Image (tube, rainbow over all chains, first blue to last red):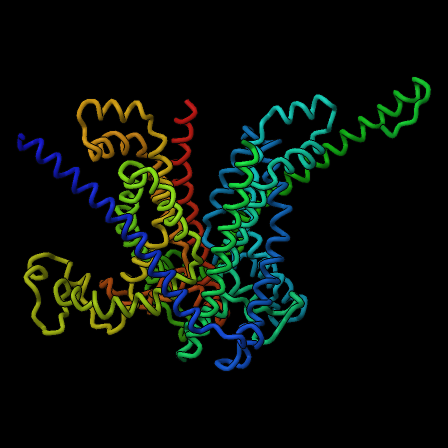
Length: 288
Length: 340
């Protein structure tokens, strides 16, 4: 065994060992974060969290924040889904391989990772400030503004998955429909989007998972509200915003409520990503 | 068919009307779709425009001085961007220093080393990390990791690498290596610091970088790798001399993608950065970042302070836009190569 050979063997072992170590480190942090969220969250869970509102502080619950999260997320998804699906359809069906289409596809990928706090300030400028001017000065943070901010974050996710899924639809389907004289808009809406349905649903679920943990864009749009608000024209609380507020509070009781909120949000997000995987994998099986 | 049977003339008229209506529908539909797609462009331009417009007072008042001033004094209404800009860059660079080698290791393990049955579960577990909301990272950092760091890691760092050790005896390394003492010297008693924020950011961006790397490693033609193996290369030599050079531009793209995420991250950083508006050479001292300054101060700010925060947001947006642009361009090169 020459010394060169030995050195190469040792380098190889070292590299393989380090790569395994890197993977273990990644998995260890995942386990650590999930474990703490589960442990602290389950310890803090109690029925009053779901029935009382945050106005009672340490004796209250998170009911208004949960309702607020649901409403704001719903508005976000309700705005982003139709726009995102149609924009994705345009990229895949009308503008594929055109300069404008390629540029928008490219910019969409950038919007996908754009800092969410800047999106929040953008919506603050275009929604909160004008409505404030209408009401003569009292700042009009609202659940709608929060929903619009989240829609802007969900939009690129939905555009991208719709675009990708539509491009996966076999072109024989398009040709068959066109040869029967179906207009292209009908082909897009009634045949292609339906064929790519489960992929598009996956995209919507992923977008929902992405926005339901977002905090930064809500701080200056939905703002927060210690009382129950269902009408999104009011200020609205949301789980991430309450977690942020309570975690910064010096009181231990507030911290454990923040953990409970974190537990609920994490479970929701993880279930959504699991569901999106299931939808996609079932689709794959049915195509085979 | 809803058209009633009739004379040839009237049926051709119906057909003509119908095809005209179809053409109109088609055009309307095309415009609607294009309008939706242009919203993507509009929101990017709008975000840049809104923050620039919001920051116009600050830019007009301070000019270029805004970028190099360390002042942040709401009492005297004087603002400068240097402290948050420094914090953003320092935390992101630390995150990259940690995340890039770890991500490379994970990608290498998952594409070359691990037994095939282990690859799918491990890679979905790592991708799970990417799905955890950033506020959870922030809470974990604040309540679990920062105290752990302050108890177990920070004392060792300050005593062995810093210029302010607890017992006053500066170590040999610090006496002989310049800068290192300043970098790790701190008498701040808590864990929250630029280094901890960098570590938390690193954990957040590892799944992004490693999944890009793993994906591009798999695009390397098997022929190329097997030729190298046939010549007697080891797995490490194939990875370092064949796989990495072949995928270099996409790997850099993946790293820039992670950098873009790290620069704009708000919640995870805000919790563990300590929010100190002071410039310190030590990475164990608290600091602030652009995003966390905005998150902390915007709701109570007014006038020039609000405008300065908007100006900060504009800087952040422009910088992340450029970083992400580079990332996507680098990643696109690989796609072009794939098509060849």
